Amino acid sequence: MKLQPIIVSLLENDMYKFSMGQAIYHQFPAYKTTWTFKCRNQDVVFTKEMVQEIRDQIRAYCELTFQEDELQYLDNIRWIKGSYIDFLRLWRPRYEDFSITEEGDCGLSIETRGTWLNTSMYEIPTLAIVNEVYFRMNYDYTQLISSFREKLSEKIGWLESGRYDLSSFSEFGLRRRLSAEAQDLAVKELAAAKLAQGKFVGTSNVYLARKYDLTPVGTMAHEWIMCVGQGDHKHNPAYSNWYSLDAWVKEYSVLNGTALTDAITTDCFLRDFQLTYSTLFSGVRHDSGDPFEWGEKMIAHYESLGIDPSTKTLLFSDSLNFERADALCKHFKGRTKVAFGIGTYISNDTCVAPLNIVMKTTMCNGQDVAKISDTPGKGMCKNPEYIEYLERCIDWRMKHE
Image (cartoon, rainbow, N blue to C red):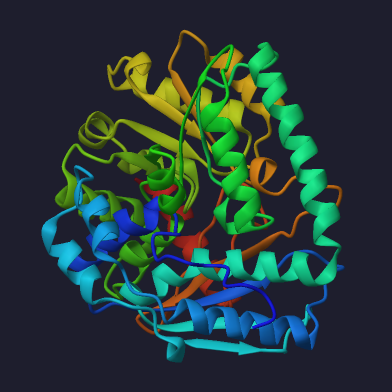
């Protein structure tokens, strides 16, 4: 490797990978998935040297194992069970699950194939590695980190002066961070800041949450709804949300309950998010579509069920900055609880544009899977015919049920 190891601990992953991982281990250990990398930036090219460095970094990541003090930290989280800790004690990433080539429009192709237990855990570290390799090898990193520090200092000044009210917010930027150094600095500075309004409660990065004694934040991602709802060939995919909510409640009951609404559109989600689930889950997460319209729709939904919206939390996590979060906070103040997960704006705001890279589940148990979010273009599926089939299933259900 030309660079120092980027991922230094298996805790360096988003919290929802552990919450989903435990449920996968207990309920879907035989499921197999394929994940596919995509760079959405049109003008980004990865050189052969970058691709080789990415290979070397991922190989180094695959040499890591969980340390006993790390497992003890996880074991102290209320909803994590001892059986999952014992599994993690034996678990390690497999480099054989990765295919990394110089193919693709951007000069980089990555796919992972294997059990869902394994491949789910690879997504976030892989994206963090790709990001850091690209920015360190394509730019003057000293200039970038200097720009990052300046912008971070300005942001913290805004929060300490009371310019923005972010209510309860967390840092969600691991997958698209400038570097491990940058994310560490951001979390450290935010944790120490004296905010005039609102509260910085934690980070999705479990490694940094442990390091700075913060709350590790995260429940479920789109992969959960896609694989649980569409991975069983007998399931009607228009009921993906019902299958995934049911499995989540079996695992966690009333604990760890923030539901993601937009895997196959929020309108379809609400058909399944009726009284039982709306009561059991403490809140819902927004990740696509107009956030103000979505929030109003969720408040109206709770009210239609006789549930006081002020007892529930709306968590916003889609392309946020402080200005957007402040506007949402003001709009919904006094009507419901609001919280924010802010990613790239905190972890990769420099003098150059960040990468827009993703790694998505594209197959489960040999079958195509897809998400149809509230924002066109956010989905990713290799088979257009499957998307058409999924859309027809959803359309039929919405019109006839």
